[in-house]
Length: 640
Image 1 (spheres, rainbow, N blue to C red):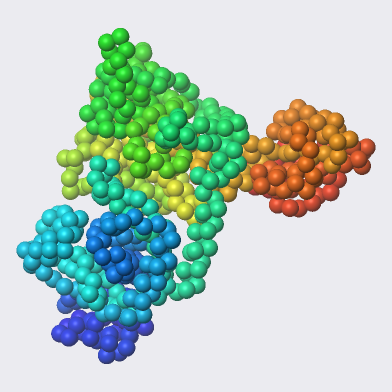
Image 2: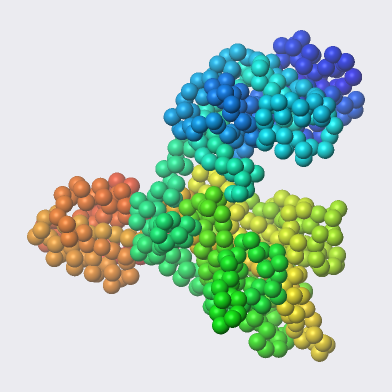
């Protein structure tokens, strides 16, 4: 007997007949069961003690169950339509679900309409979904008979002797669940995309076809999500970047994952770098510059050749010595530190660098600016005494919030990654060092008033860390800032400082990146603003548009005056187009200010001001316009 709370709030006692029977008797709909905060299948045996809560489709806890069931409806439809198709995996994900298949013949996006129609039929059939437990040997025989090689591989990794399957109609799939009681509950579902995906993410293995979909408990929620997807598609930096002439990537000529910054993109990068450098100088950092390659001995000492070789490019031979493109900047910063003896009075030392690094990423995971092979880290390393660490972490948090705020990011989620308390043997450094480091991070977060989620087992082996995730204008989460302890490299490089006792001591070192990399951050910025950058970042802040050829000299003079005032301005006088065309082109290029010059404006030293939003501010003196742009730049706000 178990005490159960229904979605309506009614409390019932469930006996041997089970929860599903009790729900059918009351004509109640259930999606899943919550027990001690964990989601369970409605078919699972109920405990004799503890509070059991049944959740309906509209409960947020049931969303993954709905989407996981939708992935099975998708796989069911595909097996009906494409005999011989082989099944891989089909999980729920943050925005919906996917299922990976190996089709007998290739399919394309046009086929999604046909598959979706078959899914609708399966939903309309309202097939009961049953959980089936098979002995391991029987499960292996069944999957082997069907030729489901991917499922057999997954089965070999399951240690249990009784194996969970789910059946709906003629469709049976290896799965641990949980699932909804019937297919008829998957009412509001949509297939949204198709892509290639390597089996188990391994480029050496089969390329499968991944079909993406999404599902929601209500039509309104689904339609709202599809509108959000469309807005995200319009903001996709992979399309906006080339369209706005900001950057390009040439896979066949230059190389995959290698970014070319065009003049407009480079203008924005210059503003980012200049602001970043100025803020770091104010915060007491020393800027350094290091080479792009280093001897193999350096990477052996750092441990990269032991632990990170697969992410590094192949060595090059120089005068009989092996050199590697650098995947990290830290060994170079340590080398600078070790050029002379350091006293406790010298610490903290804060080295910062916009250092370009190179990492070999497989072609299948490259993604515009967000995943590349050559990128510039906004890197820094803080070398300090143990008693300084808390204040240094707090200063890092102050700096990152100030810098990210200037770029328009004000919503954050913070994760504190610490070691797994059950397996401390997997981490280097003493318990005392870890406790001090974790305590310093916690106290800094609390002093800053930042709430955080503790993530046991997510620390890297050489130290705990803080990760800061920002929410963009579409409420998507992006991990940017990381503040990371390192007990490893100071030991490997035998770093030391002379304490006030005259003895050598090991310093603490913190790796710290605020923006992550300029390439990835730029891609995020493009999507955050939809290409309509605030005035201080806009590559072209104002265009001057003559009405007729007679106003060309005046328009060029106005552009010169703006440039002398430090404004990035252009006079569009080379190609004679209609004023309507010029205004539309400026809006498409998302230029903040359009300054129209007709005969009246030329005669009076004026410009007629239009904003990229379509607002017409009318004629204004050129000097007033200069002051307005300068004020918008100085404020780093969104207002024009």
